[in-house]
Image (cartoon, rainbow, N blue to C red; front, side, top):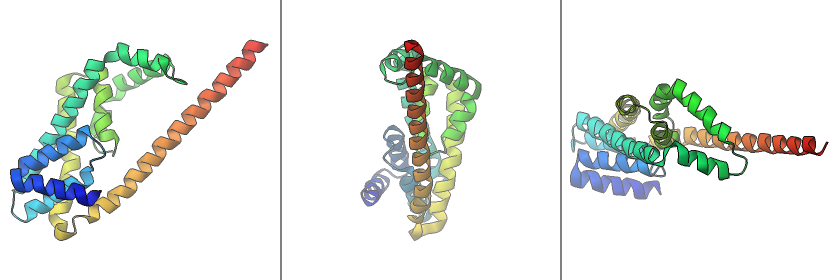
Length: 209
């Protein structure tokens, strides 16, 4: 799969130059299965070959990140709190109070969440949706999305730039981190489900007494 994505991204950059890298990253934000750990180092490698300037690779990939994040922000804003609460109320094991606690948490830590979330695989894209649902000020969201994206993109574009032909090594190292994140998410879901089932069973026993 990575080889196919690399060929696709290479074709975009060959055709469009640095804007092609930005377009690829915008799509990566909208479709997380497209791995930035492939596209960004490849953009750096392309810059090392002189097909685009290094600063162009950094600017366009960051612009692509922001555009993709804004699209998801507006999806969250269009969805809105009332719909999210209505959906949550219909889901098994999910309580409306979970949404309310999340809102409080996001109000307190939203800026840090958006900034650091741009550097965490999987959450890089998803964090934009609750920011939209909670109507984080657009200027604040855009600023910290830009700063977080620039930090993440710079690391991987520069890695590809200096590694040259060995740019694909980046994917292997990041893949380990991604698997760790996925494992933690799965563990958190399992714990959440177990806790809710125990709570439900306790409530049923109490109601029978």
